[in-house]
Amino acid sequence: MRVVIQRVKSASVIVDSKIKSNIGSGLMVLVGFEPADSNDDIEWITKKMLGLRIFDDENGIMNRSVSDIDGEILLISQFTLHARTKKGNRPSYINAAASKVAIPLYEKFISTVEKGLGKPVGTGVFGAYMQVELINDGPVTITMDSKRKE
Image (cartoon, rainbow, N blue to C red; front, side, top):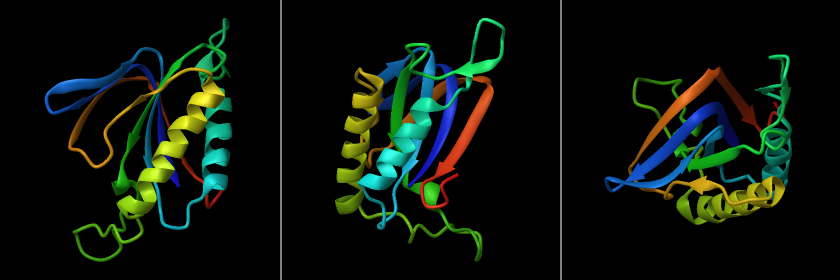
């Protein structure tokens, strides 16, 4: 399981020319799954993500988490996070989980994050063509991979 986490002032996702979800200050998270991912991967990523101290405290030091600031989260599925680019110029997505595996993992990730955050999160539409707009705050962008535990 891989995620790209961006600290944002705001973010939204548009599907079929309509805003599906939008958030204010918080995290915009792109997530990609691979076939070997499990609930353990979801739990590890969720705990790390919700605990990341990447928001400024009263002294301007990144010392607060998204939970500490009562921030919002937007979760977007993105299989291209598992692109392989070693050969040629056309990425291979062979390492990305198929929909039948990825959809239940995505749904479990959403519910796990909502439980940990204590409120609903915004989402995209799995497999849909989406347009994501955001104002990256900082910029702060962090990647995590549950298999590497980093």
